[in-house]
Image 1 (cartoon, each protein chain N blue to C red):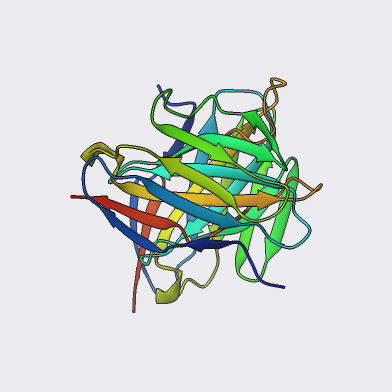
Image 2: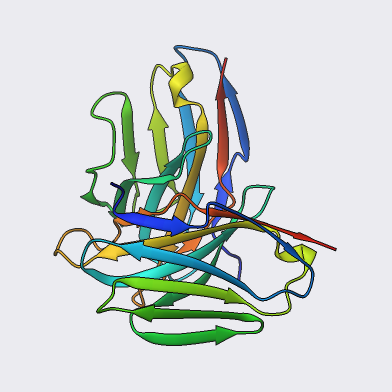
Amino acid sequence: NAGVMQNPRHLVRRRGQEARLRCSPMKGHSHVYWYRQLPEEGLKFMVYLQKENIIDESGMPKERFSAEFPKEGPSILRIQQVVRGDSAAYFCASSGLADEQFFGPGTRLTVL
Amino acid sequence: KNEVEQSPQNLTAQEGEFITINCSYSVGISALHWLQQHPGGGIVSLFMLSSGKKKHGRLIATINIQEKHSSLHITASHPRDSAVYICAVRSEDGGSQGNLIFGKGTKLSVKP
């Protein structure tokens, strides 16, 4: 039973480009959470999704960031027109009915 | 003041020592998580608990709901336990079940 998968593991973008981060939850999990860890800072909640629904996006920046979890395929965190301040590690977690969250390995985004 | 406070921030121990990491929180919670983040950056869920005590191998986690305090203990510590240990709580205030609030982490280094 594979764990939570994230890809790419490392992503380099130039300012103004788009970044797409993918997360495949554990088998049987229908809840996906995205967290961001800025350099030298703690983890911060961004968004919580269930299949085809955004449940809570209170931690998402209002502009340039969006997330989806389609009926088929992975969850996508999309950052448009990236800026240097977006450089961070982005972690995805998934859970089933038991609520315990299992984390993916993260995507390290570097904006040049 | 952060809603989740951990102490100590940094901890150096000799191999074999008994280690305690503390977590205090100021909100009502439905669950508390202990996570481990290795130097490579991946995050592993160690425990999720809402009352009492849990044990897994050399790791023990306890929680006192009345005092809003949890501890993570490591018995017979080993250099491979070196990592950042993160406490995270899920608020009970009826909001998103996904919205974990994280402590800043305790960086543990175990010397041989």
